Every structure is written in C-alpha cells, then in structure tokens.
Length: 123
Image (cartoon, rainbow, N blue to C red; front, side, top):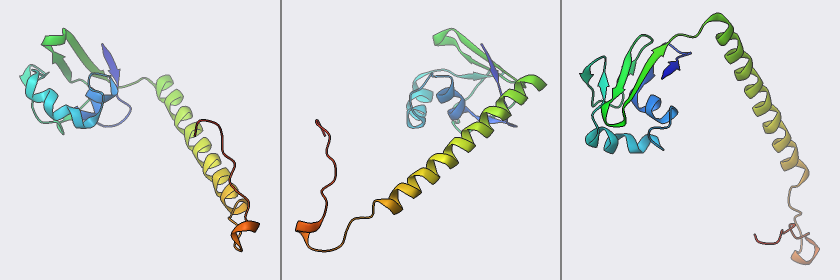
C-alpha cells in the first residue's frame, strides 16, 4: 500500500488512524503493545515516532506494508484545492451559525410571552 504524505512527516499514531488500522488515536497504545510494528525493518513501539517520505511501515500480523511517498505536483495541487474548499465551507458555515444565533436570541420577559422552541418528533 502506498500512502501520499502531503506534510513533512506524520506520527505513527496519526498514520495508523488515518489508514484505518485503529479506530481512534487512544487505541494506539494498546495496539502497539499487542502487535509488532516494523519501521524500516526495526520494531517500533513509540506512538509519536515521526515517519517521513521514503519510510516503510510493516505490520506482519496483518500482512500489510505501507510505503510513504511524496505526492507529485498534480496531486499536491488537487490536495491544496480541496483544503481551500474545506476552509471556505467551514468559514461559510461559521458565518451562517453566527447569523442564526443573532436572529434567534431568546425573548426576555414573562414566560407566557416567550416562544417555545420548535421540537421535532423523536427528540
């Protein structure tokens, strides 16, 4: 399996989580205690170990080998465009939520005059 590394490095914990070997970052400690993980042929037990392009991670029990490589120019451009779109959408959602909060401030006054929040079935 090849893994394209868009940053300078990735930690062992983050890599295992990102490729789906462990479900959460917290599970890595137990995983490393129970499983043999080889980094460039050497056993590795440090979850924060930095892994760089050109390194090879092996999991003999799962018969899996992950080779890290740097992406080519086209892949970097696609990745950059995706990141920019992600940031644009996050900013848009944040702005929409901010506008909703200012529009729907609860009325202050007697309880009988206050409008009740909308409730949906099952909530």
